[in-house]
Image (cartoon, rainbow, N blue to C red; front, top):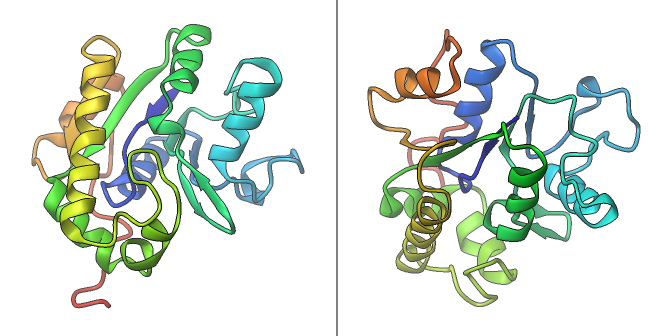
Length: 203
């Protein structure tokens, strides 16, 4: 399993596309009908599945074993506020039960990430400040400065908790990123680009 700890707007969709182009089965945010024969997983948020299985059996990946990678675990929609990539107990359960898991952290300059969040639909202007999010309680996250501090804290948390070994943090804007990820995962990445980008000047 490949598990990305990245926050929204840090290249999670780009990573998903790259891994799919490499032939891997990827769960990104939500399980689509074409990805599973299990009706219990269809249209379910990846984050909810991780938590349901963590508390049902102790193994967050119990029903996601058919996938090779999880590129975005969080969900902030339809009344859900799920952030497995910030939950040490859940991540440690994955690491303990699946010791071959390789953890990635898709990262980006915190200020650029914050600006992107503010422009992405209502993520920064409404959804984040109106919900309780780990490290960003309700009422916070409505400014670029608050979002940048949150992003920076998460990126430092991940690096501190995982260190080296089966963990790679990468900057999505670094020109050497594709080769770095390919070497770490020991796979070929035939595509690397920019997916799910904000439109220029989007409100």
